[in-house]
Amino acid sequence: MSEAARSRLIPEVDFDADGKQTGYVRLFHSVHASAYGFIPIPIVVIKNGAGPTALFVSGNHGDEYEGQVALANLAKSLDPATIKGRVIILPMANFPAAMAGRRTSPIDEGNLNRSFPGHPDGTVTQQIAYFIEHVLIPKADVVCDLHSGGSSLMYVPCALIKRAADAGRHAQQAALLTAFGAPLAYISGGGNGTGTDSTLMGGAERAGKLAVGTELGGSGQVTPAALRIVERGLRNVLVHMGILAEDMRIAGEATRFLEVGGPDYFVYAPDSGVFEPAVELGEMVQKGQLAGRIHFPETPWAPAVAFHFGHAGFVLCKRVPGRAMRGDCLFHLGTDVHAQL
Ligand code: CA
Image (cartoon, rainbow, N blue to C red; front, side):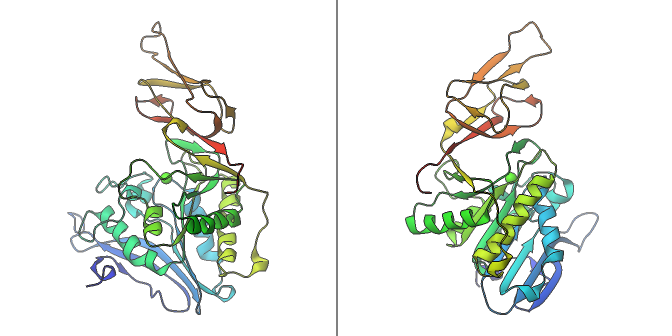
C-alpha cells in the first residue's frame, strides 16, 4: 500500500478535476455523541489545466486567525479561469483546534505543528498531520503555512523561510520569500534540537517542496495591516510559481530581511509572576539591555526580578498575557541580514 493510501482521511473533492470544488476531508471519529460521524475539515481545490500546485494552509494552530480570513477570502475570490495549475486551500488544518479557537486540539491536546510526519493510525491530530504530509504535500510545488503569534504571542507581521543546508534550495527559498513581498521577513535557524522537524514546513522540506510561512501578528485577533500583507503575499506566490499571470503581481515596499538565530535570540521568564516589558515590538535593542521585570503583586514588598536581552537586535515577537510562568517565551529578536540572503 502506498503511503498516501494508508491515510484514513477521505477527501470529498477530486484533486484532478478542473474548476472550483469545495467540500470536506472526512476524518472518522467515533465518540459518545456520534457513533459513526466524521470531523469535517474544509478544503477547496481550484484547478485549471496542467501547471504547478500551490498548497495554502492556515488553522494549523487554531487560535491564529489572520490566515484563516485570508484563505476564506481567497477561496471565494479566486476564479479558476484566471489560473494555470492548481491551488489547494486548507483553512482550518487542525479543525477541532480551530473551531475551539485554541492552539491545540481539544480532542487529544495535539499540537498539529509538532506532529509531522504524523501517523495514519494515530490520534486525530496525528492522522491530520499524516494526511497533509503524505497526501497533500506530495501534490504541491509550493507550500504556504500561515501562522501568527496566536493567543500568547504578538509578532510584527512578517513572512519567513527555514534556512536550508543545501545552497541551491536556499537560493530558491530566498527568491520565494522575496517574491512574497512582505515588509518584514526572516530566516529561521531551523528549530530546537536536531531530530525530525515535526512542523508542516519540515514536511514540505522533506518532500523537497518550496515552503514559505508567516507570523502575521497574533494576540488572537485579525488586523487590516496583517491581511493586506498576507493577501498580497499569497497572490505574489501564485505569480512567482506561474499559476497567476505576471500582471497579477501586487507591488509592495522593499522587504527588510532578518535572521533569527540561536537560543540567545529568545528571552524566557526567569520566574513566575506578572510580566512588565521594558521595550515595545519593533524596537532595536542592545545586548545586556533591560528586557523587563517579573513582579510578585501578592508580595508587593518583594523585589521584582529584572532580566536582560542576551543579544542585540530587532524585537520581532513579544508575549501578550500579563501573567507569565518561569520558562514562558517573553520576547524573540531578529538581526538584520546585510549580506546576500
Ligand atoms: Ca503558530
